[in-house]
Image (tube, rainbow, N blue to C red; front, side):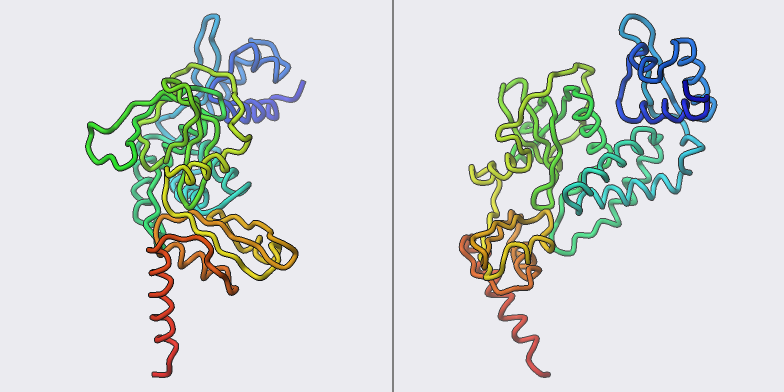
Length: 324
């Protein structure tokens, strides 16, 4: 059995990786008795960690929100900085970096007192970078709640505004089994199984509010096609979201793969050319994405609005390059 200090740290790590641990299972993972587990939990409480416990057949432990930040992790100002930085990183990064940022964000928000959450969200609201479009704001608490529910296999309820909905009467309560959070075209999406409709759905997080766990567990299903991001993109082709742009470049796919972020997908055509597929919210985003490629391209698929925006920017930039 590990010494007391290392065992206590191991206990803290386990409490941070799951919302709820049954007592016997947690004791088994630590290879200690129930009595020793209770003593270790009490040590964490003495250090300021808000560990909650419940008794009975389904009793166990969970790390909850406290009245103040645990003193041995970070101070209040550092916690606010973490929420702001991780929230921005998770929204702009892609792949493993976005997953890591979201995981860290979930851990921080899980123990953040309510008054600090409000301060962090207020700061994020005035520091968001939207130079190339109006990226929909998603609160750290919404991200963290859904991330924890997906991690723990817990059903969630939330209010969702259907596409084009502008009034309260068009808000619908949904019961969903959350599976994955993904970013496509600088938007956050939840891919989950809609229990009431008995079918898979993708939900835009900027249209989702008041998510809450139901404490009801579910068995993980296989996402259609096995790829959550691909499932969301398929929704675009079904007309759920506008803004598909396809361009062809006379360079190998490897020459562009490293410079295209989560806003596009590089598909090889042959050894000397490739296609870039982008899902954009506005014509301006298409202009930015194509310009960021840094190579000559041919637009194969785009809306008239995107083509007009490209022509307009070409005229203005050409005029700006003239002497005087």
